[in-house]
Amino acid sequence: MENKPRKPADIGPRIPMPEQPADERVRNFSEVTLGFTLDQAVEEAERCLQCKKPLCQKGCPVEIDIKSFIAKLVDKDVSGAYEVIRKTNSLPAVCGRVCPQESQCEGMCILGKKNEPVAIGRLERYIADAFMASDACEEITGTHECALVREDLQVACIGAGPASLTVAGYLASKGIKVTLFEGLHEPGGVLIYGIPEFRLPKSIVGREVNALKDLGVEIRTNWVGGKTITIQDLQDDGYDAIFIGVGAGLPRFLNIPGDNLVGVFSANEYLTRVNLGRAYDFPNYDTPTFKANDVVVIGGGNVAMDAARTAKRMGAERVSIVYRRTQDEMPARLEELHHAIEEAIEIRALCGPLAFNPGESGRLETMTVQKMCLGEPDDSGRRSPVCIEGETEEIPCDMAVVAVGTRPNPILLEATPDLELNKWGYIAADPETGETSMENVFAGGDIVTGAATVISAMGAGRRAAQEIAKRLL
Ligand code: FAD
Ligand code: SF4
Image (cartoon, rainbow, N blue to C red; front, side):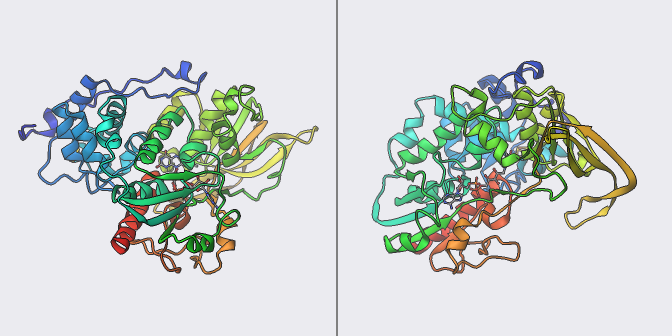
């Protein structure tokens, strides 16, 4: 691609990405966004300024060479672009769909200062999808350029979410044998059991997982670390290093009156039933779920958006999101918030949950919320919610989904007393290497940081894998 200096003001707006209309998509679980065509992707890629000092790369936690992959896409070299991305990112089709690009690469894009930033995430998604759909896939995965050359070295990962999958991809590419031990019956972590089909189709995750299997990675499902296998067992079995990537999947509740009423669920349970159990296709699949007409979801992050949009697709007539601050402070990805509003999900901002109230049947019938206003910024930099004394509201609802965060699951931690935890109960690990208090035991992702993002879990996996490779090779 020729590097002609251009001014941001001379460049047109972003190329819109086709998506299902809101009134149609709320009746199905198919993916909402449909992806670019080649022409649209190239047109969007041509908006890139090819900056001498591109800030976008610094904004990416795994530092993808964004400028180079975009240049290859402009030349319609999809395989070349994919190769650039795969050097630092093992799950590009996933990241292109779920990363909060507005606060990462696109948030740093120089074009974005005076114009709309380049749609980097959508281009990454296009390249991953186009590459996988073509025979070019064989070029990288099929030829086993990374065939296992060091069968004598073996690494175990506990959990098979994005953190462990990244460790596996990196080490397998160095020829090291990696085995993943996953507690559930499918690998993928939150990508499979949390994020709904309409945002991240399971087939996409499956394809990325298969690419890892092609590199020789072994995945054993239904193995619960701390119950069916312990870290000591893995050490006794001769694993040279162990990576813990078990996430933080234990839901938090609100601890308010009515928390235990029939009709009050954690987002974790609700989304797992619908996603992993495929309750949206009941009775073709075995898992049923609660049917409701008036749904209230409590929280303001991606999990809350996913729960609300799922409830709408499961047939609820009215769905609202109760959040203590204003819409501007919501931590959800902008695209998810935008899609939720398009799907007629009401945002009840500045409302704090006070109680879930039963009707005569004993089931949830209403929820009482406290009206709030914004006060001074707190530690997170966001203005904190302050109660407006005496102002409350009762919201009719037959289902409430609580999406106010998670904690670490204690199973593995309690079975491993030598593993040092930090004051919040997560594993204490070196942020640069993932090293824990136990020799050759590493950790990364949500089990170290608390609930965060896919790409931050992948970044942690990558750093740990680099350290493991340095020690073993
Ligand atoms: P996880 O993805 O949680 O994977 C951990 C794996 O370990 C799981 O498969 C679990 O079953 C397994 N496991 C747990 N305990 C054991 C054990 N004892 N033995 C064996 N296996 C075990 N992030 C984004 O960037 N963008 C989004 O749009 C986004 N949306 C989200 C939506 C939802 C509904 C949720 C819940 C999270 C979302 N996130 C999003 C956050 C993101 O998914 C997580 O930060 C990320 O998945 C963490 O990766 P991880 O590998 O650390 O853990
Ligand atoms: Fe292109 Fe934006 Fe990166 Fe510059 S900062 S190279 S315009 S994507």
